[in-house]
Structure formats: C-alpha cells, structure tokens
Image (cartoon, rainbow, N blue to C red; front, side, top):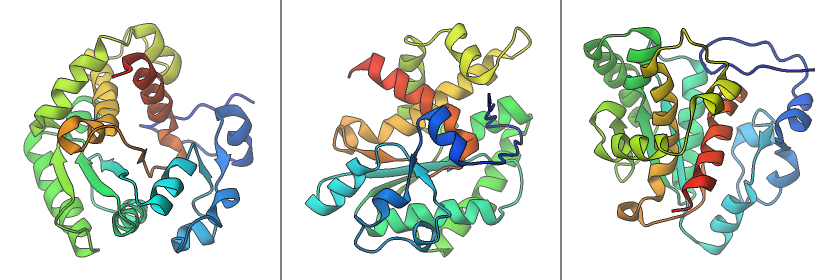
Length: 230
C-alpha cells in the first residue's frame, strides 16, 4: 500500500487502520479515557487518530498552557465537515486552550483562484459567523492569512528551512506547480506554529483538529519545527 493523502483533492480511504502504520498515526481510543469529559466525536470514535495528543491531555490535567488551531479555506459554503472541526476547536477552548482560527485566503487564492473579495465574503459569512454562533469565545483569535503579519513573517522564516525537493516528496509538486501554491503550504505551517510565538505566551503544546487528508501539512510542519529549533 502507498496511500497518497491530498489536502486539495479527494481520496477514498478503505482502511483507516493502515494510516497508523504508514503515517505514524496512533489510535485515539487508547488515550480517550484520560480525558475528563471527552467530546462525543471522541467517544464515538469519529476522531480516530492522533500524534502526541498525550501532551494535550497532560496540559489539561496540570492546568498548563496549550493551544488549539485549525483553519478553513474559503472556497465555498460551510458544510458538516467544517461544523465538526469548529466544534472540536470550541471544545478544546472550553477545556482551557488558547484558540486560533485561520481563514486560509492565501491558499484559496493561489490554489483555487478565488478572488480576495470572494475570500473575504465567504470567510466572514460562512465560517466566522458560524463559528461564533456555535459558541466560539471572544478571547480566541480569528484572522485572515493575508492580514496576519505574524503568519506572513513566519512563512518567510520557515521558507529558509524548506526546499522544493521536500515539498515535492510530501505533496507531489512538479515543475508545473506555481510558486504561490508552494508558498501556501508554508503559510499552513506558519498558521500551525504561530500560536507558539512569544506574544501568545511562547512554546506550548498545540493540537490541530483536521481530517486525515490534511496529514501532509502536519508532517511538513513537524519537520520544519524541528529544523527551526526556535
């Protein structure tokens, strides 16, 4: 088996258990019992895998700082998958996490060709309004990639530790892939890592609720974070 997980396409996964061996994802049910009040998606095994979530459970138990971060690419109306991620973010926020939500307009513009105006409209009307309606607390952070100086500056820094060969191996990029598309993957990594910047309290465990198709972003970010060693 050689499963290709594509963050911008669709992939049918016949046996999710194979992801454990191939991508180093661990079964979530093994750690679910350590949570004081697991979310229903956890109890029902809809959330099925994790990497290093024990760092989050430890932070919850010890009342240590931790973050939750995820985002939405504004290319169309909200759907059930978006709602599920929003609920996971809100649950972690209620459990004590500093919550971050990014509207990935740079990704939508570079990968899907969505105009900046449309990105703004979809981001606000479909995602931000829904997130707040579901219970996102006002002490959380909601931002557009194109307007966050933290994300843009960190994207540049991360690019100094990344090369085309690495991106090609993870995402299958070719000579036809636009530079903006490649840069958007670093914007994703900057989204994931910027909650650990000093202005947000410095390094802390951060959980990223996403579907299995987004795993390439996780692998890239973990590798870059190790190389940055900031």
